[in-house]
Length: 73
Image (cartoon, rainbow, N blue to C red; front, side):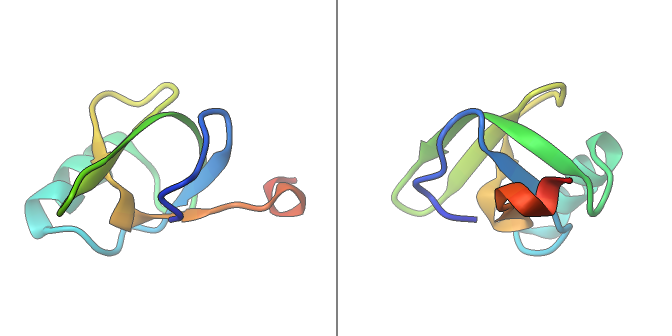
């Protein structure tokens, strides 16, 4: 996903990227292919994470892609 994504924008969980442990945690909390609303993002030097509305915890940005408005419908 783009690291300049703003809170309120939509992202899709693609269940790729990140390390195996991050994916296992994410799989227990999200559905592959489902669209989520970004609540917050933290961009670090080596690792960036997002917090999503209705989802517990912070998750690696590598596991998401941005969703353009027409794709949300």
